[in-house]
Structures are given as C-alpha cells and as structure tokens.
Amino acid sequence: MRIARFVTDSDPAYGVVTGEPDEQTIIQLAGDPFYQGIQETGQTHKLEDVRLVAPIIPRSKLIGVGKNYADHVKEMGGEVPASPLLFLMPNTAVVGPDEPVKLPSFSDEISYEAELAVVIGRICKDVPLDRVPEVIFGYTVANDLTARDAQRSDNQWARAKGFDGSAPLGPWIETELEPEGLRITGTHNGKTVQDGNTAQMIFGVHELVSYISEAMTLLPGDVILTGTPAGVGLLSDGDTFEAEIEGIGILRNTFRV
Image (cartoon, rainbow, N blue to C red):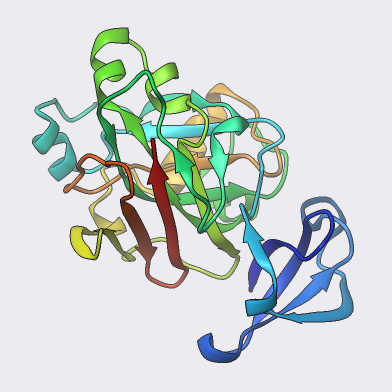
C-alpha cells in the first residue's frame, strides 16, 4: 500500500495511491493513519490533479546513518565504522517531492545522497531484531543533502546535515516492502551517478532500528535515513536530482541558490 500526503485547495490530507502509473488515483483517508489507522473516506482524486507533499513530517525526529555503504566510505576517504554512525536532523529539514530546494548561503558544496528511509509506525524502545518489522510503518525515498564544507569545518554534522530543505522525502510511503536487495539509484541532470543496492549496507535495516532504539525511544512518524551508496557529487543552481528505489518510486527535486 502506498500512503501519500497531498494538497488540493486546503490543508494536506493523507491518501492511498492506487492504479497503474498512467492512471493513478488517490483515495483520501480520514485523519492521520499513524494514529487512526487506514480509514478511507471514499473521496477520490486523480493523482495528476493533486500536489504531493512530503509523505511524513516527523513530530519527533529524523535519524541519519553515516558511512553505511563501504563503497561510499571508500570514495570519501574514511574508515568503515565498527557500529552505526548516527546523527539527528530537525523536522524543518524535510521537503516533499518536486519541491524546489533553496541551497543554503553558508555552503558552496551541497552534495546529493540517494537513500532508503524507514518510517516508524509505533512507539518502541529496545526492539529485538526479530520484532523490528512490527514497528515499521513503511519505507520512502530520501535525498540526504550534505554541506560538505560545513561537515569538514564543524567537527559535528548538525549544520551540515540539518539545514532547511536538507531532507527531501517522497513520493509516498510504501507499507508492503522487504528492504533487502533493493536497487537504489541517483540521477543528476539526467545522468545516472549512483547505482547501488540495499544489500550492500554495512548495517541492515533491522540492525539499525534495533540499535537506534537502544539509545532513544522511537515514535510514530520518526524517520531513519539508512545511508547512501557511492557516487555522491555536488549540486548547482538549476540542477535536478532524482533518487529512485526499487519498489517505491522516484523522488525528484530541483535546486536553486
């Protein structure tokens, strides 16, 4: 099931996306599916007649995972971490699909990173590996933008990873997906620059959720960004980047100074 947030002419609503790519519709839901479940109202829209927005704005937090693909670690000149390398991002970092992203004035080196994002569905703490699937609502596509110059100068990643617009998410949340073995690609101005697979993660989805939940309580709508494969590069004014994950879809954004 694909759960999206969308706007027609009023406040954002949730809906279920159905149909083939050329004839997709969205069935509006009553309320918030994270707290009220999937309750269809019967009201439908053509997908082309609505504007998709970020499928989730975390009420609590986004948790990023750094250096989780060995080929990306190699291209960045670092060492493979012995345990997951975590960082936090504010919910003001989130923007939606096809939304223009303003590049921050403090950086001249904003990099793209196509990533699988995990969306938590229930409150949880100290989750055993075998029970991780019970706490996952679904998966979406992320572009974990990074200010490389700030990342080098600041000695921590809050500014480099958490600026406004640094976490595009979308186009929707896929609730029925096995996260292992998914192709993940990034296309920069029409050229494929990233081409990896979630099977290449150093720490898999279940390991990450269990590990993170040892340190902090996870709440419904929290988002975990699981790391990026090799091929990262810099964005410039007017660029377009598409992050695509098998079984979910394409997250497309343009970038402006």
